[in-house]
Amino acid sequence: MFPLVKGLLKDKKKYSDKLSIFSIAQMLDIPKETVRRKVDALCKKKLLVYSVREGVTIGDNWELLVKKIAPKDLLSLDKAIKVISKNVGLSEFLNDIKK
Image (cartoon, rainbow, N blue to C red; front, side, top):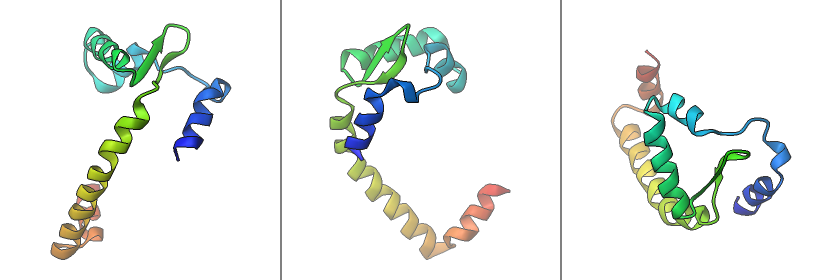
């Protein structure tokens, strides 16, 4: 997956719209200045890259972070699915969410 995503990142023409700090603030419904500070902190860690022209994009260190947290997230998801399946079943759980 990582080589595929890296290839997409290099070919900027595949992005039709840029992700701006303002659009992130609107989606998350939090102040723009808060988003700007958080993006700035993530840029310093090289997890994100921000420029006015290109917007917010993935930084060089994102792969290292994802490789650390993805296995834990998948194990947690696996445990949750097993518990749901054991108790009420996934289809019933999804039906309750849809209501």
